[in-house]
Amino acid sequence: MAALVLAAGFTSCSEDDLDTNQYNKSGVNILGFGPMPITRGATMRVTGTQLNQVKEVLFPEGNQKLTPATTYVNGDFSVQSSEEMTVTIPDQCVPGKLRLVTNNGETIVSASNITFVEEIKVSSMSPDPVHPGDVLTIKGEYVWNIGQVVFFDHVTVNAEDFVKNTRTEIQVRVPMEAKTGEVAYNDGSDGAENTQIGTLNVDAAKATGVSNANPEFGETITITGENLDLVSSIDFPAMADVPFQVANDGKSINVTVPTNTISGTVTLNSASGLTTSVNITVPLATVSSTSPVKDVKVGQTITIKGNKLDRITQLILPAIDNPLKKGQFTQSATEISFVVPEGMGDGKVTLVQHDNYSVESDKISMYSEAPETTIWAGKFVIGNWNAGMQELAWGGFDWSTVKPGQVLTVYLTPDMSEGWSQIRIGNGSWAALPGTADVNPLTAADTKFSVTLTQAMIDEMVKNGGLVICGAFFTITKITLSILETTIWSGHFALGSWAAGMGDLSWGGYDWSKVAVGTTLKLYYEVDSSVGYINIRFGNGSWEALPSTKGWGSDGNASPDPSETSIKTVLTKDDLDQLVNKGGLVICGAGIFVKKVVLQ
Image (cartoon, rainbow, N blue to C red; front, side, top):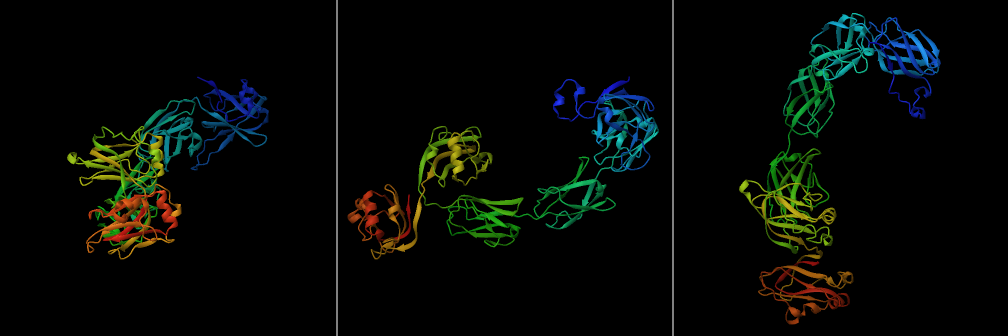
């Protein structure tokens, strides 16, 4: 049945488009043409706007040249008015778009296709199989009325792009996107139904082997197979779109192993969406042990053992901003060692081989002399992610009073009856705090889990419901926060038996005027058993005991139990008057080694 085809879907954006009268468009426009389908040599009516400005009418032309170029044939036309013309369909016309060339050289293209009335009959399709990029020949009667060849999975070629269009034969260059499956055709009309021709086997790339499945980084490997000229890209694990070279016969590909890849599957992609692959194993570092891992102190050496550790380029230490670069630690193929720096926190050391691969040490717990305050104590049993400890959530604790750098410690006992245990430090909605892992595995030896709080973590708890401890198979017994302290002196000073006072913080050695009333002054020390007794005095520059310490004993001399390792006082206004105006602080006494003086 013949009909007038309306040319909908123009791209003009002028205000004329708002007018319901379609003839109020500016410039040359095709509004419709027909009847469709039509026969060659017949007269077709075209409606539109400013058609009197048209100088040529072009139709897609059938040809017999094996070239991808589209050619056009002129149609004789007669302008009836600015809104109508008649056109004679050329004998060599094939399905496709109608094109009007205006006096100013602009080409107006129809939205719909010209189609033909004669019935299409296909008798053969060859070759089978066919290689993408090669020519597929379809023979029959009136096959030049085919407006579109449809390969499997909706891959189409329009008649205007056929390399040959004659009444009895068309030739179509098989798209690189084509793959094995049903091939169909239609006449190119809007909403046309496809007519099946049959199943066509289309060559596909297939990798069958690799020259070295255990290559070194930077090594060129050869992947062998069939139809590898169809490969459009190669993806290594963690590295997409790696450059490659294909042999002329399509049976091999040379590609260089990227320095930042990992072991796994090398995927060869084709334009069809099909993939083929080979597997490789590259040399990657592994960790077998870490020592020591408990009560580690600044200045100690940690040794990490494993394999291929000579490939590690940097170490990322817990709570340390700048990684240790190659050359800042000792390494061999089986061992890495480094000296623990000041400020290192609890956690795992990340050993970085390259941008896409790293491995972790065992969890390390730092020794801490820092005091802590208990913010919750009791017994809370957590099963398999079935409950969260919420006593410090939703108003249970004022997290706005916490400072960055304080250490949050959860004291716990893992239940390894299921063979595993996990913990998460979360906000009120159980989401992991910023910078913490979603899931942290626990071992049977773990007795606590610590996190050094950042401002981002504190902000999250303040804004989103506080702290929830959740996970699987452990019991919480206590939660603490460290008390921040500032070290104003550290070293090793023997008091002997009142032989000398540690006066580095006296007579200008420290600016006591900046210390506030209520600050805690704390001394860390070790017992000197050779003396036989212990006396400790916090004195001014003249060794006179500070007012707040005079109750420690005679003349302000404390005599602590030998098991103690620290002593402190809360500074009063009178203490600070002495420290500022009477020569600062001298620590004197007997039987101890002064190790560190801090302010809290």
